[in-house]
Length: 125
Image (cartoon, rainbow, N blue to C red; front, side):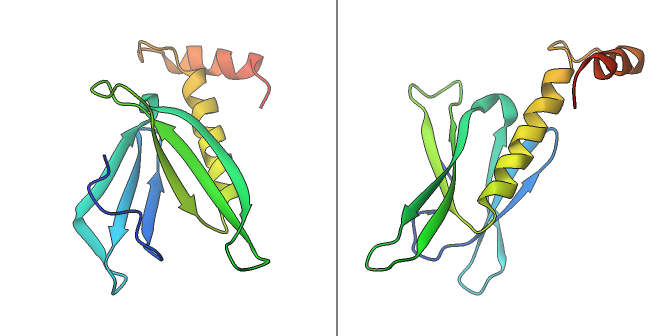
C-alpha cells in the first residue's frame, strides 16, 4: 500500500527512476515534497505496465494514464497505481528501457563487464 493518499483529486507525485528501484514522492498541497511520504518499488515487484487514454467526465478532453501493477512478496494480489500525466508515453519508454537493461544482466548479478559487453554485442538495441 502506498504511504500516502494518491487518490486525491489533483494530488501530485514526483517519480524518480533508476536501475535499482522506482520512487514516488507525494507532494503536499503547497507543492512541497513530503519526506515521510515516499513509496519505493523494486523492479522485480512490478508485474505489468501500460498506457490508457480515456475520456474525462463531462468533457471532450482525453486523460492520459500511465498504469503499473505491482506485487510484493507479502501480497496475495496485484495492486494498481494510476498516474494521470501528459508524459505517459515517456514513462512507458523509461520502464521499457529499464526492463530491457535489467534483462541484459544475469539474475545472480555477478556478471562481469566482459560478459555484459558480450551480451550487448549479440542483443539488438
